[in-house]
Amino acid sequence: MGNGSGLSRGDRRRNERLSRLRQIVSKDLAVIGIDLADDKQAIVVCDHDSVVLARRRVRARAWALGPTLDWALGEAIAAGFAGAVVACEPTGHRWRVVAQLAAERGLSLVCVQPVLVGRSRIAEDFTRDKTDDKDAVLIARLTTELRCYVPEDPDDVWARLRHLGSRRARLIVESTACVQQLRDLLECAWPASLEAAALPFDSKSWQASMFVVLHRCDGDPATVRAMGWKRFAAAVRRELPRWGTTRWFSAIVRAVFDATRDMTGVAVQRRGALERALFVMEDWHATRHRRAETEARMVAVLGELDLVELVTSVPGLSAVGAAQILAECGNPARFASPRSLVKHAGLCPRENNSGNHTGTSKLSGAGRPGLRLAAWRAVWGAIHANPVYTARFAHLTTRPDNPLTPGQARAAIAAALLRQLHVVVTRRVRWDATIASAPTPIAAAA
Image (tube, rainbow, N blue to C red; front, side):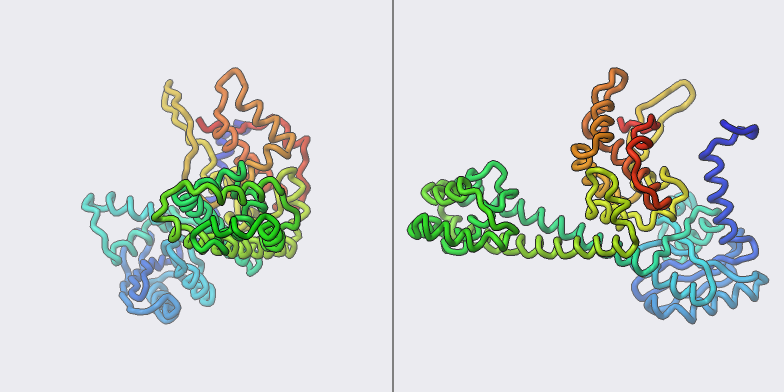
């Protein structure tokens, strides 16, 4: 326990968090609960016993709620309160608008998770009845119970990194969709082209060769064969710089050219499928270019924050990978501890113990999926390049007592990476292999 009161570290941190919330949602402030929608808003003013002091429904966009907040604040003061705190659900973008309007009036804003509001509807009268007016009251009630949190309030640099990270995540999805669609089209109409390289979509020589074929074949690869090897090779060499290289692997280029002899595939679909495949390759190329540009901007933002050298001091962690993690979580300083950041990612273990029963612990899976995915992707490269993570992965997967599967071990190392990144960024120190390799209670996700 470490102290005479018997309080655990978790108890103390929870008490500190509740104390900070109570300073914001103090007893002398009323609560302005808002159920946000597109152009119709429900607002209530409540005391700390959930007694509704005033209610109003307005037809207005979020940006036009300034006068309504002034009215609600006046009602709170008229009821004997020193002021008010604003509460809403963090849905969409509208809550950020309300946060700015509240700040302009000297009011604090807290958010209530929508899942808590949904569960509170059931606890209210077991009917699952849902209306905007009732939800506004439930938001106010949960706020007075301190079942709320203070949302992130980033500066313009951290906000820009967040938006760039969202764009990069979307471009990765689009790029992956292009690859999958291109594979499906070629498997149907011209499967021999996929056998020209072991990993065709990772080979720049294959990409350039395929673009030349699709651009010139007009649905019939045999027409490219008529060009002859020399003209085809020259066209591929001219195409290579567009795909990010000037050097080719001649065996792959030759294999693509030879594949024009093999017309295996659904003949009736070939012309249309290869025409569509050309469009997909163009989309893929454009998406990759936009992604590279976005990643360069993200690294530049890290430079503005003076974090490039710090985050890349972790062997195997690239500046782009670190930027994506920080874009998803925001400034790590807003988390009280490294473990809080891990919980935010949903990479903390979910205990399952009761009495003498000890169940299987699994990952909570709650939190921010984008952050969990960013950490997971970063670990794949870091495990191979970081000796500490390599040794940790080997230990977790081969230990005699409760060995983990490779996926579970990667999840445990992803949690460790987030904890270490929190320390590196918040304390402005470089990653230390000696400290990182020390025995730590990395809980397993079973």
